[in-house]
Image 1 (cartoon, rainbow over the protein chains, first blue to last red):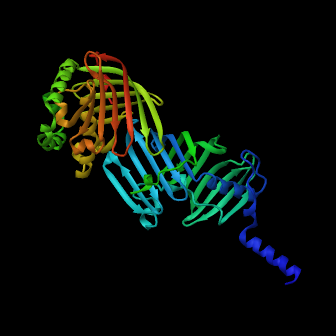
Image 2: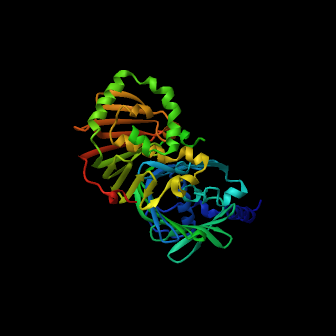
Length: 241
Length: 216
């Protein structure tokens, strides 16, 4: 093979594989200068915290202007295990949500109900019998494979193709934080997640305020995290059902 | 118990009746006698007011959620938890339902008659009403609803006899104190492993509490 051909082949392979994926993300808090770095920031976010727990205050803002507050806890084991509990009256577990692979279980003890299903069921994967699919909030799929990025002024927008649409993630140029994430189905966003109040937890910047908006439902959630833990052992039995 | 039975819904009476008949004999005479003594001590309690600190130990995150506020009890079947920290919220538990922040919550939100059979079995209201009785103190009648063992003279462990309670709570431990032998510490153990510990202080026995104190 001649040298120009070898060079052309190498360039072709780099283009096919997406040479930007080899970019290293900037150190936490540092500026992001390229779309490749923005993609690396998103990939790092998902790779550097394989397990996580959090306790939080949840406020539900209803379309009629009413608000309802409760506390909750979540434990995540990537790539596909999640357990979320919401407590009412400070004591009672009123909502208990488990994801294990493509299966989910929703228990609402106050209503005496339990639902078990699969996300790949066409009927349940859209909104589910239980309401919105909560995986995008806590278990976004890995971004590496199909990510692209564009410059949007003071931030980059990283786009990730997903089975039922796409995910767009805003990465701040100033400090590399993920400020917003939107899940699109066709042109309309299904879920918009705004992140704020980043603080370092064991060397990783994590958002302590998360605003979740469901535009179609005119529903908004505010999650104020009280405490995170990262990369601690998690009992696998928590996800069994 | 007659007063309690009178305020309990038929649902709870039905749920408790068979287990009580079957297991009442399991309570030893010593336990019955001690419960009787405690019942006499708390018999004059009609209302309570106390400061509370509540710690819920959450199994899935190995963390503790704390809250505190004022606890109000009317022995006729009304309880109010006025949570001050970390967020102000008022929870009222009465015969006609559970109310949080002024709204009826849970399976009873549509009224008892609207419950499905499944929901009625797992409604939290019987459990909460059962707790109402416990928070007022224990007596010989406590053994009707719970398998009772004494850890020491003023500390009891109660295991619910009825499914309507055991679905929510696997056990309750109560430490009694004061002249009226009212609960000073209550430990609630859930089937899923979570534990909630409630500590009462500044307990006032028989304060004047009007209906407004238990308004939703």
